[in-house]
Length: 472
Image (tube, rainbow, N blue to C red; front, top):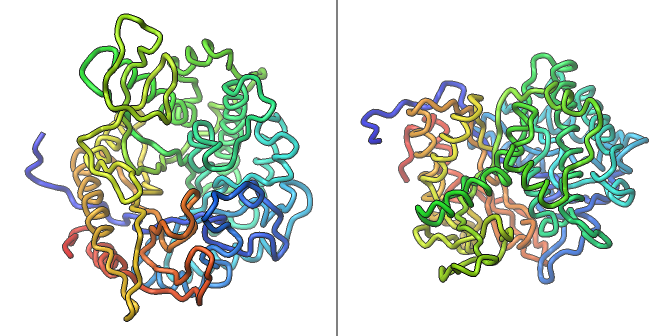
């Protein structure tokens, strides 16, 4: 399909960018904050931890002013559960309540809509020691946390996100420091029982939001990577359908319709991993409905059929070993796609394809809550950061948003990762994403001074023109 006329982006389009509490705030165990699993996990050797990060906790007024200068319409940030409830339950830390209240007020005073993520990979360590999301009690623990947020901020926050990348918590928990399989005999049973409880917590929270904050809107925030088959072989097409179901549609089917995807259910049956479902659970799943679908997008995925158990045929393709699921799919390196400095595939057309697929399945407005380029940014002696590579990356993705909108997709806004340099989950500070440079190295904190990158000025112009001017 060749589009001869592009529609403009809708009036009120939510231009902004994103961060997460544990990656940007610093003051990780001060001001009454308790430890989360991100504070107690083993940080990869050679990378900094999360004690200081970008020190957003102490620089938030300066940082919000810079975002306002760019013209942000919204700012996506998360609230650290243990800054509100140091032990996950029980006593409330008033200093934490006050910090986020001030942050929200600061955003509003600059005309920026707060876009609040309730949970971004930072389960309270006290709850993790009790069994974390594997316990039925975790559902009510999360809903209680949400209730406190709605009580304190519900009158000022219009947009809420429930759980960031729940699918990554399930599929890549070890890599992000949220899952341990020590002493576990069936990892699938553990993971999908935890997933079931998160889905229940999400449904209850969405229903509670509509009850307590009738003017607010709420949605899930999974990481969606549309999955391609490695070839037109029927076996590869089936493998791609399998991975799409397991990686993507399970989470959105449950959020929107309250039903388990049939392909996932078969997968769980075969792995003795059907979660324990209590009477009434599925009614709860249908009780809380999202107002929109937020999603994080970095690239697509490609898989082929796993024929390793079939002596009749074996693949000779150049394969990736990470992410294989024996007998279900096998990861495949897509040589049609360029990669970032950190080896991540870049697929701009896949961004548009992902919009199309989500909208055709669910018919809900969509909000991009992460999309960005991690790179080795360099600060020059005169205080400049020339990140043309980031401008090129973001321009191409925004062009795909405009194409998707022209094809009838409802898109509410675009919040790339990240507003400001922060600590990457895997690579520390060296992997930079922000429009704003933070002057620090991996272990030398320097002065933490803020510098505007070239992409800062470019994005400001993009916002001013509502996406019409994407030129350098």
